[in-house]
Image (tube, rainbow over all chains, first blue to last red; front, side):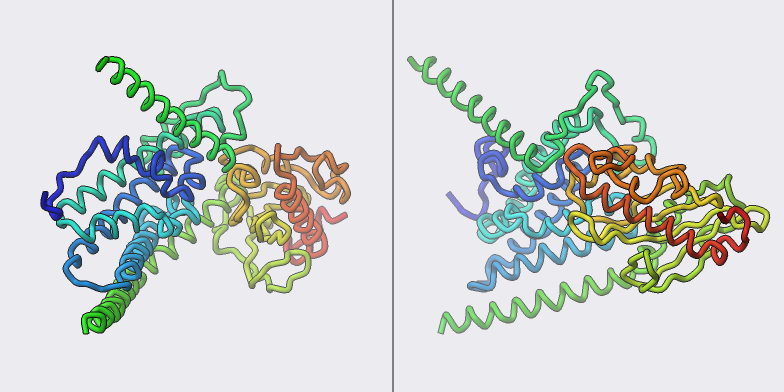
Length: 221
Length: 211
């Protein structure tokens, strides 16, 4: 099978090799930014953009053997793109930029970006690499948003606060208060709670995997 | 020989990437500088109007300023800053002081304290902080109403020792799981009130309401 034009395995990347639940990559932004849906969504989208840019450049230069410098160059590309996004957001999406705080620059330490760029993009066609970055980034963003929504609901007793920062003033109406949640679980808003809920998500995934494996085995019998 | 070529390519690659990156960043920085500055000013002005809404004053709050040096006593500012005056019919009906709380949990907390003519707190708003997400940062208005608990308080109705959380003998609620952040803000607000008292005449431009 030709290495430079692998067909990306969508389902595999989303489930079997999910970057967070299986690879345990990108835990820093996961814990820090998933306190609300809007933060998770924004940072997830930004991570996808950074991954596409970085993987694209890594793939375009894949025939040049930089040796040990490849990792350095990839990191420089990802951090430069984050800096550019930071500046552009400061000018055109100031409030959202403020809401993300220190976690926008911290996308640069997200191991997922470096991992995909060096492991996949540096050895595959540009088209495959961009697709890989999109799908892996999407899988990451999916878990981010899932965790963010759970933590916002449990931790603040409301849902979809501040969505207007990304979707415009009409999105203010999306804010749903849940009056039946009288005393929110503040633990869910803390980093410790984020770790716990992530662990639970991993447990759920593992359970689903083992149950479906048992079912498949039983069917074969 | 191959190793040498790799090292050479690697070095050139790094230099090229670095130069290109710096160039792109510099261009973007210059292109967005003005816009970012104006957005920052707008965000700050927004906070000023949260404290003294448009209906309460008839001057241009954001530009009616007075300078405050970095070593101004009680305010503990890290660098020179400005205070703001709200006027109605020429009379100064309120001032806004920038105060820094250096005893925050994770560093400085910068706040704005709005003070009325009668030396009571009109409102307190956060400008910048690095308090723990989910714990200390719940002092922020979008997460709780704690900041509003200081509205209307003054050194007359709340003596110095009472500017603390209830478990330390004060009269203010604490935040579950976070005491250092509210403590720092309470102390900073109290210092702002003390400053206003000491400089009442120059800031409010009159002797009315003094004592």
